[in-house]
Length: 356
Image (tube, rainbow, N blue to C red):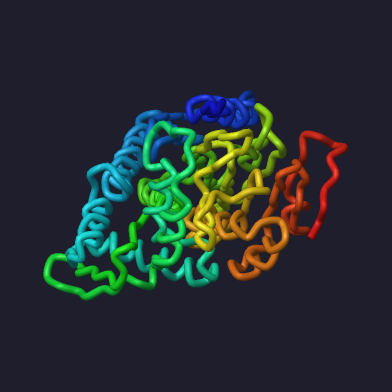
């Protein structure tokens, strides 16, 4: 008998992550700290502002939350949104004029897809939906292998899209009607970068923004750096902790957030574009990024490493110019770059690490 198992559902995962972060923030200083929570992008989000009065922190945090909702409304892959309108138009063989912002996002995602040799491929939203992950609940069933093969043969790519500036926006055309865009591996990171920009414009110098485990740091937490936890992929708690420098972001892709069990086998939402099937043999990938697009990179760059798997994840990391990355394999083994090994403090001091 097959059964649906949602180990660490999103609300519970969020509780774990908040407890991890809260543990490290509590009792550090007498300076004021303002926190606001919400539910966007299918997960819990939190904005923590340090060293500002509530009168200054509250409107800045509210502006960030409003921005998150705007992006959610624009980028949702299957519920009514600007992106779902584009997906519908592509499926019907029509061009569609979209906002300049959405066109820019799609072009950036296409560049990252090319850099990843196609392992990060937001154009396979049709496959993601076929496996049942375009829903808040997942049915434990495997699609018809022939239908999967047809999607793989259609080979939807972000490079199938072309763009023409027109009055009122950008006209998007697809040479491949199989393209269905799912920005679930990009949107949270983009939102982090937008949050950083808005907070800085509001004069906020020290803050931590967490979108379901994708985190970006601004400034410091008093005299200390912002310390956050990396979720253990199989246990309730942190696998490790890390101190984030100003402007750094950290993101994890895991098989424990959106998945179902069927016949004793785990099927997660991270699909291999080459096979059309959920990736096996990897529990989680964590990347640490910095720079002007740290948020986007913390979200998107973990995906090609996850798909590449144990044998090729280091090669994929080189493609993405990543020096700080970690992969937890299907047996719980930890593979880590030397750069990230120097930054992480593991909860299990006896854990054997394979530095690569």
